[in-house]
Length: 147
Image 1 (tube, helix red, strand yellow):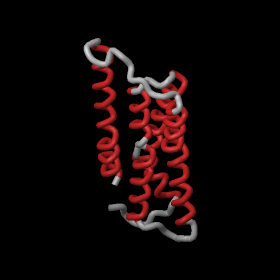
Image 2 (cartoon, helix red, strand yellow):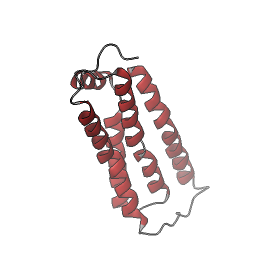
Image 3 (cartoon, rainbow, N blue to C red):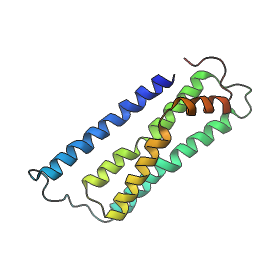
Image 4 (cartoon, rainbow, N blue to C red):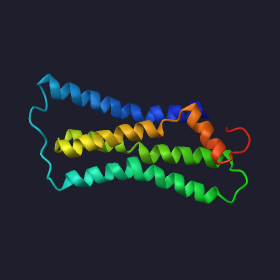
């Protein structure tokens, strides 16, 4: 199960890493994207707030809803637990893509820097390490072996 979650994590993170690498190469090669892409200042706080919602508040909400749904159960089904872990990945890994958009459109440093920090936190929080998965299994009383 941990390997399955890690494969899903990498499949979701790899494209944004490639996007950042391509943007970095284009921006610093001096050949393409010499001019910044202008965006209305209205969008800076909107993208920043969306990044905070998807990177910080979203995973906490998903975890809280799952804990509330399973608090009366003696044991949680492994399939439900796996779906919960996938949901955490889907919600939190939107943030690096929003950060890419913010960097691409050259948002002000305050917003872009905040989005980078939130994206790094989302990447760290959502990584499905063996110890975190086993700890969550213990907390949520997942029964049996997970597929």
